[in-house]
Each structure stands twice: as structure tokens, then as C-alpha cells.
Image (cartoon, rainbow, N blue to C red; front, side, top):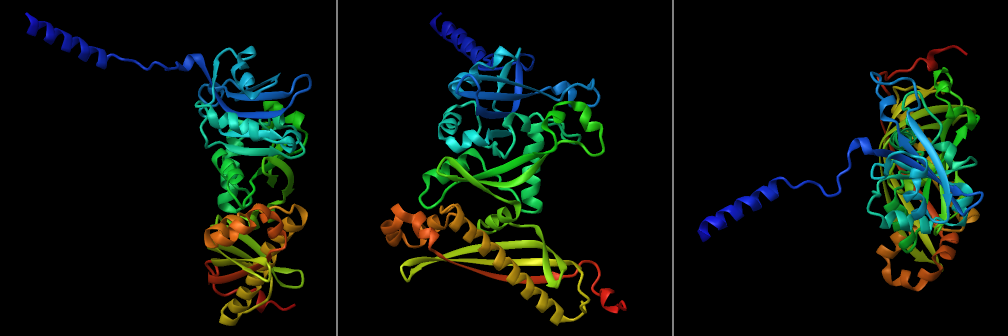
Length: 400
């Protein structure tokens, strides 16, 4: 009898294992998937949080009724924790933040510091750490996640894809995530940066889905370089050209296109196909010396100069033009940061720490001062591999 009871108990336990459900499950009909949120200063209370929830039915062509692809709602409060849990003041379903793509922060709020907000996002298990951080430059953060676009209708998804494509094709925007920002703050010898974007056109027109019926949608959210931070406080911006130069120092440029002068008011178009960057540091004459060594392969896509494209000397001349152009551009960006902001956003101090740990320990407390007086040297080695699908050009054969 005892053995029979044991068998029965074992069978019951087996059924318990098989039929267990998820204790924290959420039915799709009970939730709203949040794709983005915007944080800015409140008018009556300390903060205002705006959340963009996907209206899934309006995304798919077979089910769309022409309504808005997302719903944006905002409330005010004193802590981001309170605001996140209070969103059902306006939403009927429970917001789920685990699929969020972008967090847009208002410029004014970013200048006061973003550390406390990111600390909450890092602590909260519902938020992943792979969303992109964007500073709204000269516009309201809420307007950034309210501006629709005809190809990617959900605004926050459009911003995320736009940053990825810009970084991969041209190198004008860094894909900074929460972990990247926190690592930069907590690492000696580096200050953080984030993506910066703005709106071209009247933001009020972008909140109506009717505007995407136009051949030239107005407004449109555009990439606007990077935001520069001193620890967790916004201090300024770099434009798209400087952003590409910044990414070159980070070894994050794989593809980009350059317009390099080849004579007075004439240019050659160069497509960079592969690039590798190494940083070397030293300390001489009582100041750091930073050498940025870049090796890249390129394709000649166009030439406005009437040079013989079948001659090897032409390519050697063009390679020298490109070398000088890139070296001047990157060096100019680093010097601009030295003179304008006086903080190391490039991570040169972190590299110096790895290469010269004893010396860095001596100057660690004043690294930003050391960075401002550092000697910057950029060495570029360019190899033009081919000239598109045509070797010979026709401009040198045209009578002027």
C-alpha cells in the first residue's frame, strides 16, 4: 500500500511540473508595447514623461484603418519611477517597456544632469539596456517621438533604424546605449557622448498622419551630430562631420564617402570600404602625445579633375590628397574639443591608462587638463583599390 501511495505521489508531482504556467505572463490583449519615451522638465511638477505605445493594428496594411501607428501620452511627476508606474492615467492597457527602442531626453533637462534617470533605468528589470539614447537638439523631446514618417510609421522605430543606417553607411552617428553611457561615466579618462537629433520643419504638423501623404513630408526628424557630456551633464554638440571624425578615432568607421579637393573648387569622390584605427600614446615634454593611426581602403567613385585615370601617378597623387584631408579633418575635430570643451570624449585617457598605467596614476586626477594640452598627431595610410567599373575617364579628353 505504501509503495502504491508513492507511485501516486510521483505521478501527481509529474503533472505539477508539466502543467505549470508562467507566473509573470502577460496576455497581448492586456498590454501596450512601448517603443519609445521622452523625458523633459515639467511645467507644474519636476518631470514630464511622454510614452509612445505601438498601435499594432495600424501598422499592418491588411488591418490598418488609416489611424495613428502609435499613441503618445505624457504625465508629470517628481520621479521617473512614479511616472513609469502611473501611465495608466491615460492608457487603458499596462505599458510594457522591455521592447523600448529609443529614449529621447530634452536638451534643458540634459544640461542639469541625467545620472539619476539612467540609474533608475539600469536598476529596473523591465528595461533592457540596448535602447538608444538621443538628445533633442533645439526641439521638444516629446515632438521627436510624435513625428510620423511614411516608410517607418512608428516614430521611435524610425529613429532607431535611422541611427543604425547613418552609422553604417556614412559614420555620422554613434549607437550609444545605456551601458555605453554608464561605462564612459565610470571609466577613467573618458566622458560620454550620445546621438543628437532635431526636427526640420514645423513639429506641430508631424503629429498628424495626414502629412505623410505628401511627397515631401514636413516635418522630418534629422540626424544632428553628437551631444557632448561632462560626466552626466550636457555641455554642447558636435556636427555630423565632427561626429564622423570622432567615430574614426573609435575605430567605428567601416564605410563612408569623402569629397576631397583635387584642385581649386573641384573634388574627387571617395568611397571608404574598409578602415582600421589604432591609438598610440606617450608622455614627452611634460605633456601627453596622442597618435591616431588609420589604415583604410577606398574606391574612386568620381573625379571632377581632368586627370589621367589610367596612370598610377594619378592614384598616388589622389592618395596623398586623401591622406592630408583626413589628417586635417580629424586633428581639427580633436583640437576643437580641446579648446571648446576641455574634456576627453575620445577615451584617449583610457588608452593611456592601458598603455602607461604608472604614469596615468600620477596624472589621473587632472587628465582633462592634460588632454587639453596634449599633442595630437594623425597618420593616415590610404590605398585606392579601384576606380568603380570604369578605369578610364573621359574628362581629360574633353576640350575646354
